[in-house]
Image 1 (cartoon, rainbow, N blue to C red):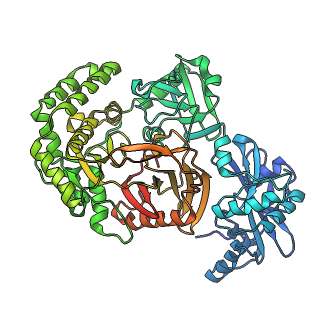
Image 2: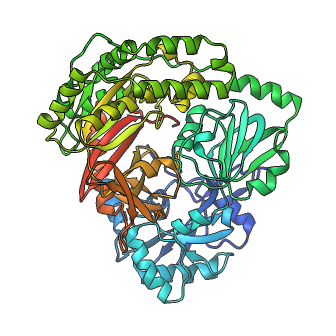
Image 3: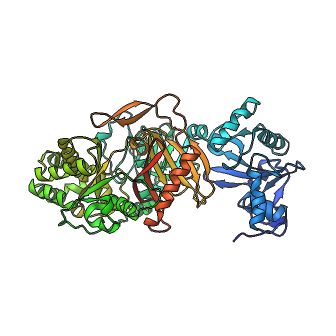
Length: 631
């Protein structure tokens, strides 16, 4: 229910400088920074204010955004003194059309990290160039910051920005702001640990980390094992695997392009590390900080795995799998099966079938590898010596891939691929009982082999996926969450491959503004989706509000290459074709969000989802859906 203010003068306690000060709920000018601080509020790292211009009288109102959550709260209830009725709301909403019947409704933003002031409009506003110019001219005479820069929020507004720019008004895009920012918080928090700086050029495959390290990364890596804190000099998106890991571990995680210069002298020392929306603090830790934060970091998390049915040898198509069959086919397969069997309108999932845990257990037992696992876990060095653990896991994975797969099993799988999946290239994907769980999504822990063709190649790919149960990153992640490794089993999902035009991730939350309960965060890149979650390059990022189709652009993809299917099997890297343009147009964003909304009832109400999708031409496919960890 909306709170309606009955008068234009209210008493507010606004901190020490303004405690007990009575002030208007709106003013007709903002002459200085002190006034701005009263009428604006902090949203993430930025400061936000709002203005309203009456196009009939040319009056301007700078409203207190701490009192009025949206422009309509002020316009309808305070300025027009009208009741909050459907008819009055419809009349008010006409002010977001190209022709403004009464008001121009705008935002002022102080982008603290790049020291830039901009003005802009809600992403659903169809404002034209003339009204943008009118607004800026009015602000020039009433706002203390002059030469404000226009910031378009939507694809439509970016077209308007081209006209505005021709008329001499400076323009800056959210993409430019995002990429120019020297600093970005991905997870706020505090920690202590030994600072380790990873040298430039360090191969990803050679990296091992300790749980008590705070790591300074100077390059983007596709993943990382558990640590106490992360600081990176290169950063891309909250949905990269590294950033998702930090969220799941609840550790401080930020990007600072000058971190090496600022904190290099602390290498090897025990440091106190704190991340906020606008700043990072790193210094030598006190004994009290070490005692407090170490105890918190060492508190064990425990994730209980679903029970596993190891006796069921039956393959099952996704059309015959429900969520309860997680005990046989793993969480990834059972989640997709639940979506498929529910037959939601407009939801597309590539055909596929599950190969149950039974065959992983048989493969391990036949080759005597189950005994190797038991001996490895029982050795004290498994927990205490990271290098020994890494070497033993490598030896185990090599043995799993070298052991011959049961010929009868491979014949049966290949027959199903030919008969039920049309003999097309397939994705061979992990579906363990220790991923895609509430509190533990395990994104990227296990391996996928793309566009596999031919019987022998399918057999080899299945063994790669089975072996990935024992990836170092998977073992260390499970240890951090108290998971019993002896209870982890590998199922396989074999699924028709979609040679994606583009692909990405959608989370049913606004990860940049947690007060926004309606919007989705969507990331995308051209080609297959591996590059989105690896975090190697900045993807296209938008915020989409399915309640009003508002599309806010955060960044555009900067990767010049993409991954596509090779005709002989596997994948190849090719240049992104010139003139490829925007991936997430408003129409595509709406189509994707509509598909995701359709299958939300298959999951626990109120729990945000992490959805992997691919785009083939103009058709969206859902290839994975799981609870989002980190909300």
